[in-house]
Length: 226
Figure 1 (spheres, rainbow, N blue to C red):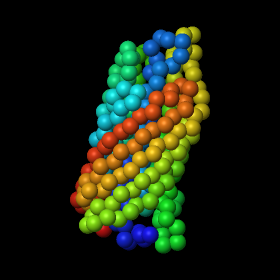
Figure 2: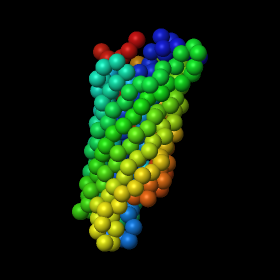
Figure 3: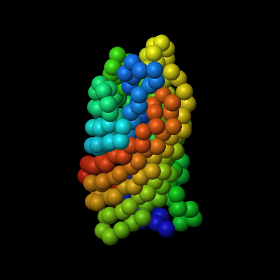
Figure 4: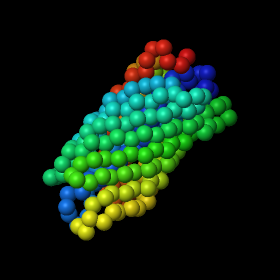
């Protein structure tokens, strides 16, 4: 297995994007669902920018920004526009989070682990949906030729979900849910990566639509770790 020095691309493979799978009501008896993958890899970023598109419960355009805040730590921002399936109105969403490295792969063990936490909100249809997820991203980077590498990962999370006026009586729904992403990152060059992730959620508020996202990440040249 590769050590940290043999896998210099790992730390720039993070897409912090904190999961903001968010709900939107339509005046029905139950909440309608919309969500997208967090696309969070298991390492801290110094700085990178990601543009992604997700589908499954509708279509989402997503922007993610990760910024380093010390050794093994970064903060993040997600923002975007979603167009859910059916007659639901488009919604805007925004959220922030952090990632903290818990474990790095070594010659003795193969896994990288990143603790994640965040909070986000979606606005639309005269209602607001909130989500507060906490989880761990787990993965391993396999080095390829030149600067290329492949990083498969899984990102399980527990989330507290709330949605105002999602029910017929306009009462607030609050529940806890278990969710996870399954995906892979392809580091094409030191500055450019392509990643794909599928999200699975069991939230009674957010819903159960599986979603799939494809993103493109750019790391500024001066911040590429050697």
